[in-house]
Image (cartoon, rainbow, N blue to C red; front, side):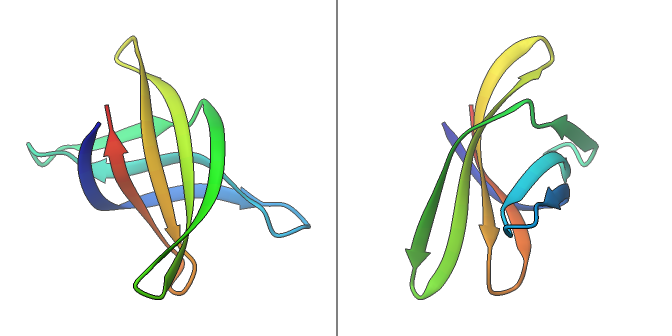
Length: 88
């Protein structure tokens, strides 16, 4: 997987238990165009603590340009920001 580590604009919803569910996100590609990706399936959710920064890691899959791709989204709990961390 290729590491991008880019902040993204995210549309998500939270249930009454406080669990987050990503729906789709937008990021700027290398050629400066905006790319919108719909999250088809969240396969795994884990917690991660890097240098005191707590994060939720969402391992997801989607069909992008007709190809099934895996990617990782990270949610920074302290500042409520989403990061596209890895993508195939």
